[in-house]
Image (cartoon, rainbow, N blue to C red; front, side, top):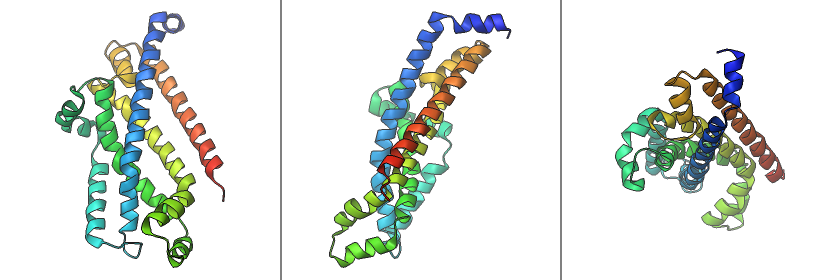
Amino acid sequence: MDLSTLLGTLTNPYLWQQMLQALKETLIMVSVSLVLAELGGLPLGIMLVVTAPGHLRPHPVLHHFLGTLVNVGRSLPFIILMVAIIPLTRLLVGTSIGTWAAVVPLTVAAIPFVARLVETSLLEVDRGVVEAAEAMGASLWQIITRVLLPEALPSLVAGATITAISLVGYSAMAGAIGGGGLGDLAIRYGYQRFQVEVMIVTVVILVILVQVVQVVGDFVARRVDHR
């Protein structure tokens, strides 16, 4: 690849039109799956903490079952998971290719990841604060919503940032099976058509996207940290 080829690619309006569309698809995949993963992973992480031995409502059997379920979910490589749940994806969105089809495996892959991050964040809360709330007669729901979650909020935001960055990488892999987004563009043009310059531009955009997510996440985490 020489300089003239690179400049010709960078000044190609069709390429940038494709890049903007791919970036839009990636943002949709990451944002929707992040919200769904948080909605699924947050209660799962809370249950892991609450049912842990010595915690608010110890339940060894349920805790072990949930822990095993989360570990199984986290152990599956994403590319295999995408293929394995194609029937579920078709059932939910009517197709196994495209941006919205990719949201399903992205969400399924992220839920156990979020659950572990939530569990870690809640376990970092000072046990004395929880015991003080119990001594004042607070209910389980009050302890969760007024003590555990507020105290762990900065760590939860940091965990959501990590999840978002991981989903950016997963969304790029989703392009391998026609999931759309920047990964799909890199595979179709950068790999299959041997346009290395497209691959380079795609990688640069992904790096910038990750940096933006990290900066925004760090900023929000600092803003909500009142300790």
